[in-house]
Length: 106
Image (cartoon, rainbow, N blue to C red; front, side, top):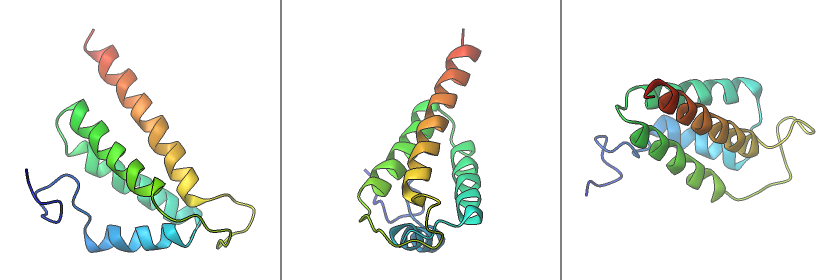
């Protein structure tokens, strides 16, 4: 089993991702941050070969997001938690991938 701190691991969090998770923990719910993060996740999953690897990476992000502390403070009050928005996006993305791969394989 590879070390999760190693870049070779799909679940490696580079310094940029670590910074994003700090922003998520403080509910930096800027729409640009959400767009940037979803684009980065799409790029990371696109580099993987199998549906299992893609969904595994998204599940790992989902787990990491769920373990972030909740806070009532936010950059934009009333716009919702960036963590919740990302969790919803991950859920939809996993369902989309499932539908795409099962449809194209039939």
